[in-house]
Image (cartoon, rainbow, N blue to C red; front, side, top):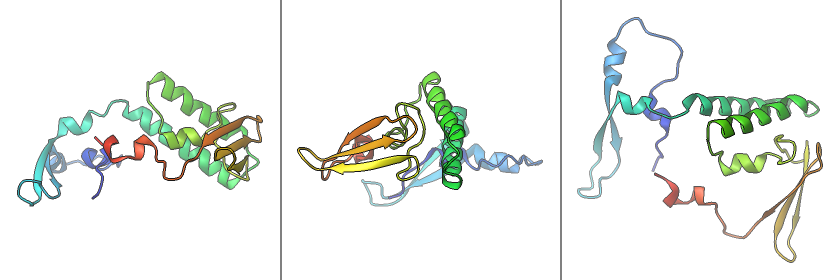
Length: 168
């Protein structure tokens, strides 16, 4: 089953504006197919109005955070010695999330150092150590600020965000 993302409801994100309004009329009310209705076993269509597609709160903040995260990852991957710009981008991500009251995904939080707010890449700017006794834990050590981060690891454990109950 494919998960529905906000991009499906918003249409294309292209900055090109068409001269005719025919495309706007098509997007005014569009039907989305939801697979396998439980009552009769057939696919059903749900009409989603244009207003509900546009009402994504803090869309600009999400886009900015996504752009900064991708830019930071690209800079670290291309030139591992460049440290100040990715650290600045990650501090901006943290500040934008705080000011707009956005909760960052746990995977993004685990990628960031809590001390210097830089993205952690094993072998490039951090070291990952796995210890299994007395309790299995993963230790992340940041080379920039020396912050040690301990994450417990259990076999079969999954974050709440990844569970099916978390989907709306």
